[in-house]
Image 1 (cartoon, rainbow, N blue to C red):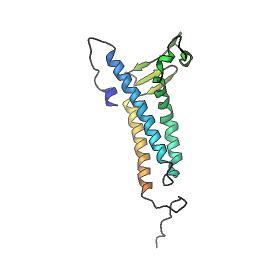
Image 2: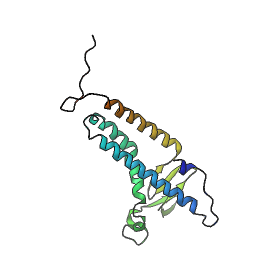
Image 3: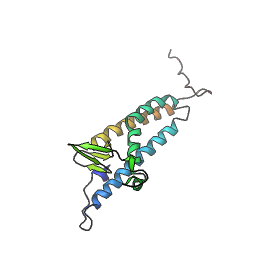
Image 4: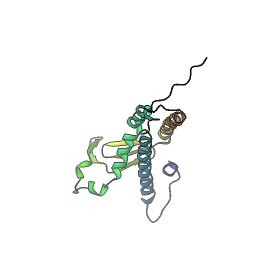
Length: 162
């Protein structure tokens, strides 16, 4: 995230280079989020953590699934150019009465990346909320890893307090 929001690299040779680098970093951010989800989902296959699947699904619905589509925006972009195989994947939008197609849009002012008719909040504030949500979920995983299990995978009830 710091690479996205850090200082803009200056280049007199190529004025677009700083923004190309930011797009590469945004793509990496989306890939990293997708990989994090895959890792957390893999953990849920262990019976010790199966009771947390619904919590992971909430995170997936709120964050991971949407950002995964951001990752897909970068995949095979060359096939989405006009006249190419998947040109129809870029939806025409209307803004202020003008129709156009957005292959990539980046508003550092608003902290938003856009592609076609979709947008992703890439602001530091959004990342902080996401990071906190994932940290809370990981704490649940850590707490569950300390529990003992029955042979069927269910948690053993703690002994009664006398």
